[in-house]
Structures are given as structure tokens and as C-alpha cells.
Image (cartoon, rainbow, N blue to C red):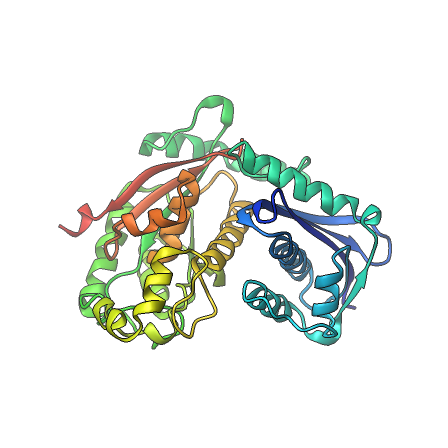
Length: 383
């Protein structure tokens, strides 16, 4: 029998717009017991955007527990409740894609929306404020208590890992314990790569070229020589699947696919060069280069929405593989986003990074919520 959950969500902005964050809790629909919680600092945003982001996080957490569940969403935002119930139109362009994303998480007939007064939404409100406090202090929000009991067997199994990571030169200070390491591998070349054409999730989904396969094989050899990879996670797009499968076969590992790691949707720019986009869509290109909230022509996805998607994927991988070294096979934009978030750099820093095909980056995530960039755009294995 499918579960029944209650999702309580909230979001806030100190300045509206200003530094913003969200919080969400998931409760058992029969007992009211807390079964999951989520919170995140999302940068500069409005209250309404933060509230929608809280809704999405709560629905995602419920879906991860049981994708067949029915959900009763309870929020003190009259706007979100009325818009998601279909009684009010969604006119603001920043909220339209967020509402659309929320609707994809569960079939419409299995989600109901109820307005509640703020005093009955205290847990979600507390989490949103904790997230904003964390962002103010330059750290990532962490739950007060572990979401699940500690697995003693897994803890013991992790003991040798610290030694292998240290041997590879990616050691953490002893008082922080063993970090989780993401080894970020961009896919090998496709026929579009040498021509520097936009190739996102809304295009033809090209496969690796012969050179791209050769690059993936060289990367596999280099990673096998290091010997510290313990899991492989990849974008489900064709070129990343092919790259990940070549490397995983060399390492003797299985590939787990994560939708949140796919490339951004470039809309009408798919398959075009930068010069062609500048000629055909000059105003849209200028807006896109000037604001992380701007979208490519015909796309529903900006770098702001990409950042949220990649952040959710990052947290899922961190939760699944604590203290391990994970190969993450993805694309230019998601990898740059992970690097940018690790550095706490502004969105426009993405335009100042170079990521070659089949290049390797490495980011470590520590128990105190901080992250460290250990490697960027290493392509020495291709020489």
C-alpha cells in the first residue's frame, strides 16, 4: 500500500529580494512523525521564489521515500497554495518554471494543497531561517541530527578509505574525518565539440566520436592508476553514459545515473555556434551573459534553475556515498556549477573557467559543510 505524507514547506528572503533560503519537512500522514527534512540557502531571491523552492524540496523528499505516495502539502503562503491548486494564474516568469517543476514530481491527483497559518508551519520556517543563517556564515546547511541511525558496518568499511584517499594526496584534516570526494569527469568529445556548438539537454543528444571514445579510455586508465574511485554516478545523456560505461568497465564498477547532472537546456541555441547565436538572437545572448536568471531562447532553464538542480543532485550523492570517492561524469555547465558552489564564487565565474573534453576536476566535501577544490581541468592523461 502506498504511503501518505504531509509536506510542510516555507521560504524566506531577508530583503525581498535578498539573501534567501527554504525549509521543508515530510511527515508520516497517519502518525505525524517527522521522516525527512530539507533546507538550503539559495542566494539572492524573493520570498515567493524561496517558497516555491521549499515546495519542490519537500515534494522531492517525499518522492524519494515513496514515488507512489499521496501527498498533502501544507503552506502558509496563500499565493503558492492558490496557484498550485489552479485557482490563481501564475504570471511571474521566475515562478512559472518552478511551478512546472513542482507539478512533475507527483501526478496531480495525488497532491493536495492546504493553507495553514504561520504558527502551524514553525518547523519549515525554522529550517528556512537556519538555511539563511548558514548562507550568511558562508557554510552549507546541515540537519541538527542524522537523518538515519549510523550504520556500524559501513563505518568500519570506511576505515581503509581514509588511508587510500590519503595515499592519493586528497587527505582531510584529522578532526574533520574522511571527506566525500567528487572526481568530476567531463564526457569525451562528440561531433559537436570541436566546432564549439551549443549541445545541451534539449538537442540531438549526440554520441561520442571516435576521438571521444579514445579520450574516455585514456581517462579510464588514469583513474584506474589512481585506484581510489569507489562509485560512479553519471548524467543519463548519451555522451555521458558512454563515457561513464567505458571508465566503469575499467574500474569494475556499476554506473548509477542521476537526472540532475544532465546539461542545461539551450533551447533554440542547440547545435549553433556562439557566433551564430550572436547573429540570430543578439538580445537574448546579451541578457544570458549578463544574468544567471536569463534563459537561452526557447529554454525554460536558466543558470539559476540549473544551480538548484545540480545542488539537489550533489546533496543526493553526498548522502548516498558519505566519506567515499565518487566519479561524477557530467557536462560543462553542471561541473562548473559544482566548482563554483564549492568556491562560493558568483554565477559569472562560470564564464571564466575552461573545461576541456574528458578533463578531470576534484572537489572534497567536509563534515563541517565546507568544500575544497583540489583539481581543475586536468587533461594530462590526454597528452
